[in-house]
Image (cartoon, rainbow over all chains, first blue to last red; front, side):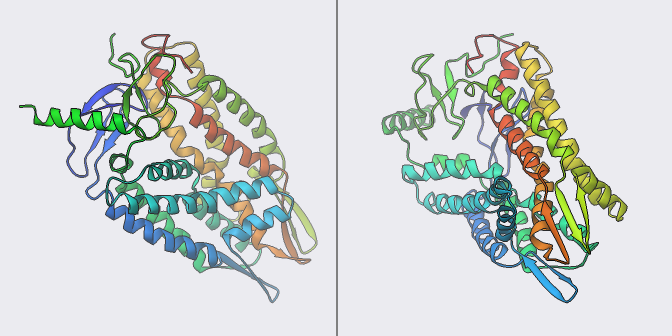
Length: 217
Length: 211
């Protein structure tokens, strides 16, 4: 039994050991407060590795091409942000670059490091710092919004000229699926349990206490 | 009603790693013993910050919808499109599912988010009890759905990046794009600075409003 406070309503509640794949919802506000994944480290690790490859392809291959009057043009994700910058939209360019490249890329790199490090607990303290950075990047990583944006742009431009989807677009699609898979399998709580505490004395006290609780008849 | 909240029990849960720890004193919470994040009973200055961001987003929402987001030059004629213009263009060109997606993401979600956050702020400030479960659900919806309004910014960016066949046909971004992107970022920050636990504090004690 682990005591937790619901992050959305602060209600204290004891969480019994969950079966693999089980989730616990808050008794008062129904938010999910704990979830247990069947394989919380190795499976998301595999998905994150795959996501790294998809991310590299998505950022190096063209998203789509355009042919009109015997001329051909194509664009990548970074080129989109660059073109906005050159056209005088520096702030928009930065926001696009952050949500489409920096946040998803950062999330992948940080999470990959964390998952590799926590495979052999206890992981050093800096791993926790990276896990916090990954959590910071997550809401700003918008690949699923971007793929819909690419599709809408394709259809809009198709009215003006001949367009063809590029390899980059399929890689973004793969990235969307992989991010969803990481979200379903990764359990940050489990990762935190494998990271060394900042306050070692408090950690020892808690370990002693939980050891006593477990041996209690 | 005596509900066992962490606050009442003198416990504080870390927003970064979820660890529940005992607060040393009521005013100086210090740092989380596990991850080292700064601890707080409630998100810092939650109400004021959220109001400020909501108001800023509401102001940006007007130029975002009035100013053009794209200027298309094709075969010598130039057209400027606002967000709604883009929706109408998609609808008339026969792809109504996409027109609907853009309408929902660009017009309805930002407006709905602003209204939802305003409603949550007002009910929390007035200390309205009850309805907590629905209001928390509304907050979660705002958190999850907010990112989708970035859709039009991506559409505009990739259209501009691809259609650059000067002098025959080219697209330039309009001044509305940056306001639109600002609405999305500001409403996301507003949702992040709002503390849903304040919804529930109103039902119990007023002392809970440390933020």
